[in-house]
Image (cartoon, rainbow, N blue to C red):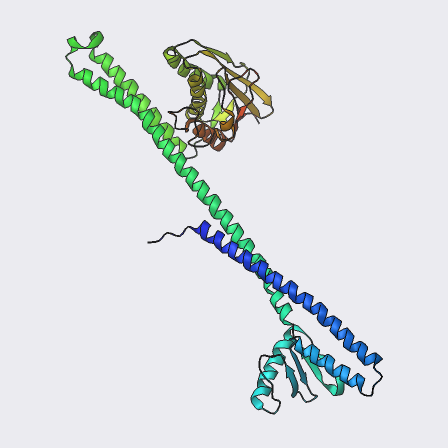
Length: 393
């Protein structure tokens, strides 16, 4: 089955319509130029009739004028005072007034012409019915062509945007699946290790680990698995928000950092600046902690191997909003990635999947109705600013 690529098909149709439209309007313009010549000829015939000195020059001029008008393609039907058609021109057939069939056809044309124009009273009680010239009839297609072109343009734009959003969504879900597999991998590997230890006789286990120690390790990994599962469950729906103490959320971040800082080769200094009187924020504790962990993890990765400082600072910027800034002294974000840093699949690390900051933006902006942005850091490094709505509005 052939799959039609609608954006390409519609774009091709639009180009064809545009070409047709340009050719069509050019033809009409050329015809209008001819109409100017036609009007000039009529003027000349009128002048000949007015200024003619030979007998019958006026009649000849009027006859020529009538012939010239009929040659323009203007539909004209003349009826007498009894309603009989005595003259019909440019109706698409040769009219014979003595033929009943032609009379019938001509009267049908009269009914149609009278819908667009009122007849003009002529000499001897005659009525003159008229229609539009071929040029005017062709002009009627212009609005339809313009409307069709606009509709196709809007449709193309809609399909392109929808396809882009679908592609971004697929990329985001793919990256999220990889992130889930990555996060599940560590506790699962740990559980496999505990299982191997259980099979080893207690006296032969490293460190003389007792059954209780193994059980505690398994319990810790299961708690971590449950936490990961609950996080991804919440990201797929709209969780309930409650009043949160941002200091408690930052303490969770501190525990996250302290567990990972020892693994870095060089020292990393953590500086917290959270006022005690800071108003609470509206949020979900588990998701908000996850979002901020992803930002902090970027800072840790930036300082790996070199060391440095991570500063977390919170302030009440203005009424209704709390600002939380996370800044590191690493190399900063490459200029070419700044505009797309929060898009799925974008990462400054060769081994990264580019999903952490995408999740953070979804959690902060989609769930918490806040904002997250990358600011220019005066002293270098990366500076992320998270704006969260205060619980005290």
